[in-house]
Length: 202
Length: 202
Image 1: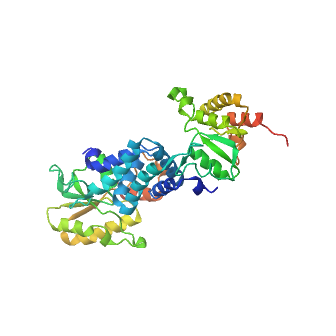
Image 2: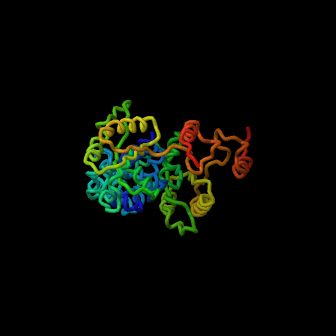
Image 3: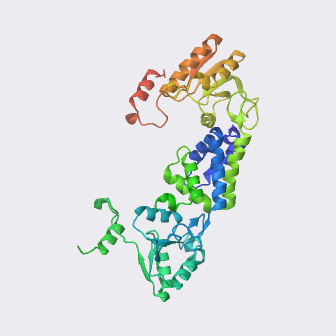
């Protein structure tokens, strides 16, 4: 009997729904589906409800385009944050990573993607107009580019630098170099090259 | 700002719901939650609906205790399956694994667990009465024990062998030995010992 016949159809559909999620392979999807049909109703319904509620209650912040329940978001609304410094990131999870470092006191701008001509993602898909409008509104002194250190990340930095140039704002980007705790012997050549180029006076 | 403040509460609840699932760590839970609030409504609602529907439509087969939409399940209802041979497994996923091998033509009995006194799981939690009733009903010639090769699996085999003894049914278990494609050099001592004990005439 083929596996699809031995698997009841509602479980098969649940497996497929899990398999569509990022990072969930066929085996994990199967394990999750079989877990959910046998666990407590509270756990299963809790997950289903959490999905629906998150969809209903989460919106984009009208200032920084991060995901938020209230508009403006908690960071933009915080009077202790420096509104004149904007850190530009690709994804909402990048905001969490930078917040974890505990040293950034400015605000954010979330692009929700990265320039990628091969996948048809141009500037018009990236909330770049909203960033330019924030800068054009005055009061912004520095824009810190914190895209990933990839080719697409670089291209996005260049593009944004160009469109912000007329506004005379300072545009910086995160330092490149050896990650903390790295082993120099195993560093890749690109990382080493950047670490050398960016060497600092002691 | 602590991470919990930077994460909107509905997303935080979704992260926690994912984190409760088996094999989903905190990072994966975060990635899944952020994916689901940003993906198409079809994908997100599809998953929520698939969970609820699977819960509503999946029941236990009244014969083999496997999960099924219709009772009896597709395997038990199949006239081509040999109803006189019952393969006893721990979990519904074990049924799928054996079906994948494509060589088993009998039916199943799913224990939904394994004897584990440390965790308070006794015979009364394992649908063993239902197995004994099937055997006592006559027409069963062989019970194949296919629990996992663990201490608890062994204890469960012994227990079931004892309760089935009065019914004069043949009780067998899966062969132990080297897994196909294994490297003898790297086989653990227990596996090698079992492979030697169970050596077969050529």
